Image 1 (cartoon, rainbow, N blue to C red):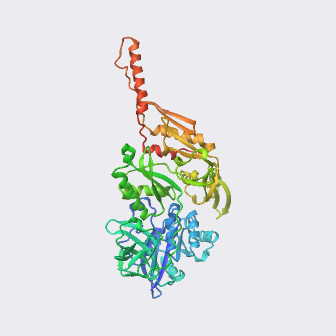
Image 2: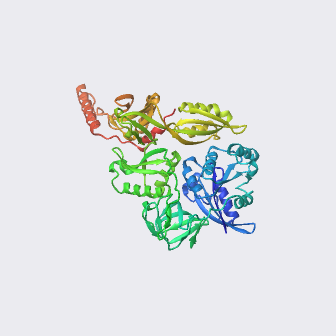
Image 3: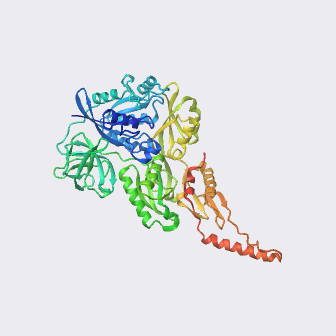
Length: 603
């Protein structure tokens, strides 16, 4: 039996998951009665949002020209924030099906995913999808693919994942054009771990691609990265239902269960070998993902004053560790805040990734979370010559101990309709963007290439781009390096006490405007107390903006009618002294919305 391993890659909403559905039906892996839309998107969050979050590996059988083929394919996410899922999937494959919407054309993430496949030396099959729509323009899109990606237009397969048109032709191309897996290089067994998940009853479920040798039930395996050994109790494939098998040979993908209970014993990218006859060298793993955005998660009870020391913090720790096993692209470390207690500082690939992780923690882990506003990482050149990285503005050293702050710069590719180019260039200019080049894609669309500070785009850049291009603008970015600039740390003081979670690092020219806008938002979000609350934004010891939340005042003179005015004055003075005492010992309750106020400051 011949084997073909391939991934389905595309820009978000170009029809990958629907195409995967048709492949499952065309190969009779699921019956018409069992079929449903986005069958492989089994997470509630995926179905609610209509996006793929996790890559799904499936094995189906197909007969082509009288010969039986085993097709192992992986449906991947399309959003830029989940590109690490795509890179992991491509490492386990020899080919890729590149899907392009015939009504939208080549988009930013289409280009990024195609380049990722080329870097992994994968054979590409271009598919022009959604040709059944009235607005479809497959011929022009095929020419775009040839012009931008260098894939011949005549090689494009015209298909409609919705109606099933062109699926048979695609299956034939997969069998004929994609290369088979390489033969085993060594006699010892080597399998690459490309995904993991935790099951409460079975322990860690490990997804593997066998490159050399074979795995059998009962084998004692060794994790080469951590050195732990286990006995394989179950092997299987998703077809798309879990189907047990006795063995996994070279070139095959599947899952492995070995009663692994310790989450730290399995790492994505590790190599599995046999304990009796181990391989001398592991397979090349994955490049570690570079986290772009950072924020803190605290159990909500710690914000209420429990310090996060109880069961809630341990419950959050357990939820974070289990989710990290299923999504290796985010990092976490324990932190402590005087305002919020114990929590975790987590790193993400982008804002959507952060949003998804937070929602998954609350749903799957059953915890309520207080989240701080996201920040990026900065490089600090110390006076000693050492370069230190910080992910939290509160960690910035005293100005006497460092020479400069360097911020992350990204190279951004923006594909927009030509009539919107002026607006998009103005947006990039307002965000301190540096114009690099412009590329003609078609008569109606062009690609702009800019260098922009990451801190300027992680909040609302994507939303503004979509609104000014009526939804047709797309963007993709990658980190290009760190540049120094006139950056300062703005501290937020509430009643004279700095709140670390609200500190921000901004450009000196916009510091006053950003600080004042943040204070205005905080004044709206923080409830009035029995005493007056002073909100201040400061750079070092210099206050650059101030807002005041007036106290709620009880009318202590309401019962005084008639009599000497000194009686009323005495009551008012007594109230005034009480307010002073309350201000010195009273705590200001800061709601969750206040920590997210950093996000909504306008331009």
